[in-house]
Length: 101
Image (cartoon, rainbow, N blue to C red; front, side):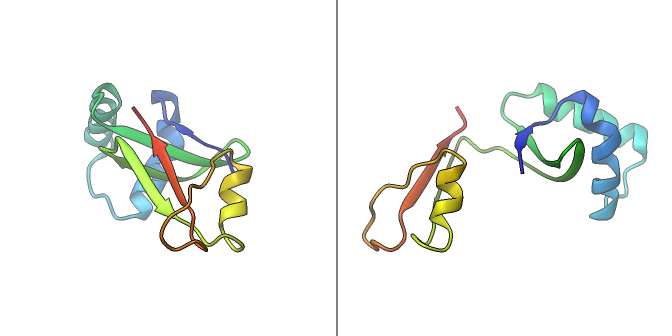
């Protein structure tokens, strides 16, 4: 499932997802907030797609992300995405990092 940065063109698919999570802003106001967040370099908005269909999103002021994954159950998934785990004090849970800088 590809994850990518969202663009203004994603609004029509993002709007129903936002409504599903309970946003009460009128569409015009929500679209302005979305445009402001896209233009602000301190924010990142990412979407997950199933083919051409947007199925999820995440937004935040994230510069760096670190997580640990079980070496047999989860780490192979992240490695297939191109991430490499580093050893940590719990050897069965390698540490993964993403720098969004």
